[in-house]
Length: 403
Ligand code: ASP
Ligand code: MG
Image (cartoon, rainbow, N blue to C red):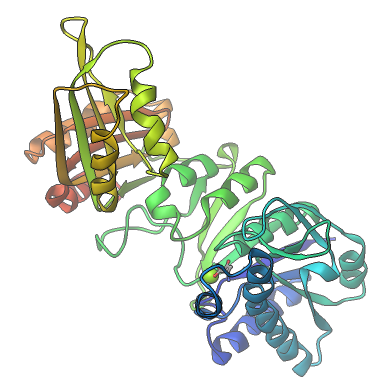
């Protein structure tokens, strides 16, 4: 059986007109002799409005009832899609997670799919039916309805593709694919035809707009090809696949940048074991997300400087936590708002020497000062002044022939 999983996000089913359009897309796969499994999210805005209602009922709305409430958005969307297919005389029906069932474990509001029962859906596919399955929801061992975290219908789609051994999983959304850099920030950004899971994961700021990062990781572990495309225009999107499927001529696949970052420096911290742990433990306890971290070598063997970045919204909280931390001593605390992390990403850099130098030289030519550097196998990130972001993006985009 040639199975394809088609996932439609909230904007793709946002209005009745759009749902009618989605049905056209589903029919085009049927014509290509695919057995089609459809996964839908709720119509855009619906989940948020349900969450708002729960808050008005109680500030302490029960997690169990939250799941029952917010999963209902998907139920409505699935029924509308199935209804439209039936209107055209096609065989279709909606399937809620509990009817299949899609089993989850873990906490309410944030469960994980652990198993999907195949038998009913396989039988239905063989009979020529088009199952429209609700994304985002599952059922736990107590037979209670669960949800799997915001944006979770991506994860539902990937898991369905896994359990039904689909040939591919197509994620329909409101953007045409993944771009070399944010097309809203830079008009020369180009749509990427093929990208590896690893690169996609590193492109957090670009990729996350398109798909949930945890779902990309799940797809990677299960070797599921994902095609991301727009449901509004009929154009090829971006294929996310394993590295060995990709023939590349470019060293760099994409460039990402962050916004609203702040830099924190602790000057003159004691250079002894356990210090970094004592600094970061209370931050992580308070759910402050620390990004780049660098520690200088200590010139005198006694003291060192430690720098890290956090989101600017969390700067005040970070400052308070550091100042009230009795485990650590430092001479001075410095804060810099308005920094941005620029990253160049590409598996090509593994086999190509000189990429780091090219990046630094390009920034130097533009008189952009690099404050912090960090690297991984397929990514080089630098911290610069936020006001230099677009200048840096443009120069690097050109240098690495992405224009
Ligand atoms: N409707 C859910 C949400 O808005 C799930 C999803 O869109 O993937 O979070
Ligand atoms: Mg959504």
